[in-house]
Image (cartoon, rainbow, N blue to C red):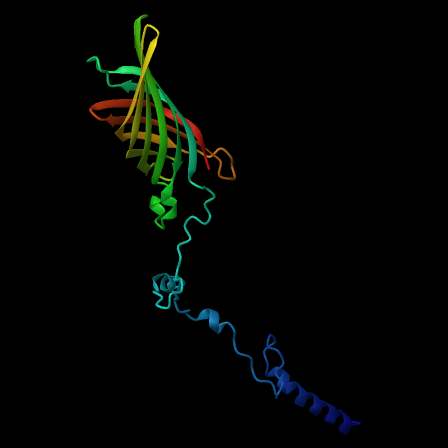
Length: 252
């Protein structure tokens, strides 16, 4: 019996020696298993600094010799606006008086179409700064007595580019505009019951300044309100006419 108890005690000591050699938190290491790498080394060490924009910069500056398209600016792809507007014009038309007066004030009416041609350029700052108008402005004057009367109708047809200075990131800005066109004049002289009609055209120079706005009318989409306040001059031959007024319409 003593011999059997002695053998059990020695066996217990022999089995307990490897277990005591390990930490309580360490997993049991089998003889044929290699110790796993410490994953924390990759986080504790200093990671090298990498310029993440280097590849993008390299592609944008790369020149292609084989005719393939290289880097293309993406400005405007997320802009739903077409840059087109239609507006009705009204205001005071100050006509150069042929009778020596300072001016003859008449009602001026018209319509115009606007195209923001700066959107076809790759320059972001010029997208909404460059635009042009195709414009028709109408005014007239009449004078005389019951026996003799004279009526004159003036039509201004112009094409004028403009440059707009935006107020920050807003939809408002000040602009300067200059262009040219044709001034068509038709006159009717009535003596008693006899009418004589005379018409003609002259080259026209348009110039002026103003304030322009294109606020959005809907939270989504490209429907906008277009308006202007402007002071324009029309030079036709030796006459200088001026228009002071505004316009209202829609833009897309």
